[in-house]
Length: 255
Ligand code: 3PY
Ligand code: MG
Image 1 (spheres, protein in one colour):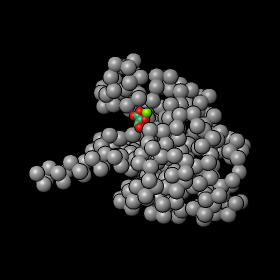
Image 2: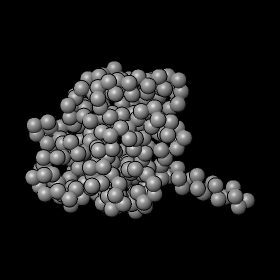
Image 3: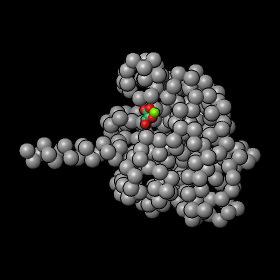
Image 4: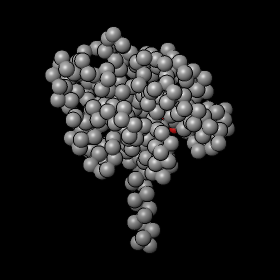
């Protein structure tokens, strides 16, 4: 099975996907992390230093390890979502989706008609999926997933509407921004009680809507707990975090 199809199939089967999160610009970082035991690799173009040219090189490296590549686009850059699908992304995460209108505009770039308005041109996606044009066109809307990030008060207020958007396959919670929003800027506390209650609520609403739930996990331990709670896609660590933890561990052992 192609790496592109694995994510949607895994989400539909109810098995959680544990992802590495990459922000370093060299595509080799994503390619190498994909060779570890992660189920998928997120390529962060919002806060990471990864531009479009690097992202489209990272996608086939991740796919070569048999893993789905999941880019996160910069805020509002929905046209980039289509281009990443053309390059073979298995899913795209869009940050700061604050309304049904935002969700449907993003989703429109993710799905071919009649669901959305994605334009035809899946160059590397044909190679990576192993499909011919007719089969790719027939399967793409179900094979590649659109995740709308929920990380503001407005998004939470409109959550059921966002979940009902037919172009959207799931949500992806940003617990840091959500905690900043819910505290009106007083704190960034992604594991505090207020944001935890909001996360539980969003997970329950997402399950009730029959959509997929993703979230940024802060550690392996916390990410594992979120997956056991029912999240379908959980990032469990970042490339820079792995570098820092590894460096600190060897230094502590040596000194
Ligand atoms: C958040 O926690 O706000 C995120 O977007 C995670 O990257
Ligand atoms: Mg965020």
